Each structure stands twice: as C-alpha cells, then as structure tokens.
Image 1: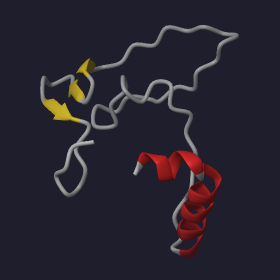
Image 2 (image 1 turned 180 degrees about the vertical axis):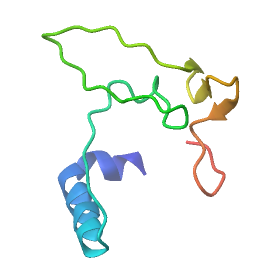
Image 3 (image 1 turned 180 degrees about the horizontal axis):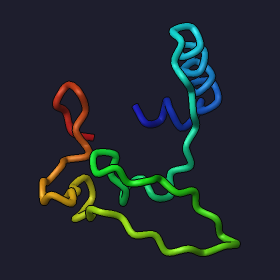
Image 4 (image 1 turned 90 degrees about the horizontal axis):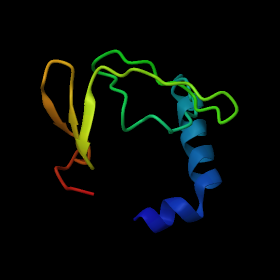
Amino acid sequence: MNLLFCCYPDLLSGYIKSLCERYGLIYKEQEESYTSKSSYLDGDDLPIYNADKQTTYQFSGKRIKRGLYRSKQGHLINALRTRRGEYW
C-alpha cells in the first residue's frame, strides 16, 4: 500500500485537497520532522524544522520506540494502529 502513496504523492494530496474543499474542511500540509515526538493529545505545538536555525524544542511526552509513545500523563499510545485495528 505504501508503494501507491509514494509513487503518486501529488495526485493523492490533490485528491484529498479537493475533497476538503468540497466538504468545507481546511486542507493544510505539514512538514513532518517532529511528528513522532510531539503529541496532539498533550497540546504540543508542531514546529517546522529549519536547518539554518537549529532550535531545541521541549515536548511533553516521549517516543519509547517505533509506534509507541508515552504521554505526559504516562499513558502509552500505540501510534501504528489503523482504524481497522491492523498494524502497519
């Protein structure tokens, strides 16, 4: 399945963008440098990486290993589960 997404990124993002416009949703592309460290549930900001201006950010939780994240309350969250319960 990943092969399909990696080969047609512009086609897929264009399709998702058109669906968002159709249903009145805001489409926003996000650079993903810190997505495995920050937590939406903990209210962390998702900074944009800038190689020219190296900054150290403090995130509330911690990535334990691939797919496993510990929130600031200590809850373990499996980040690799899909809606159907399958693992990536």
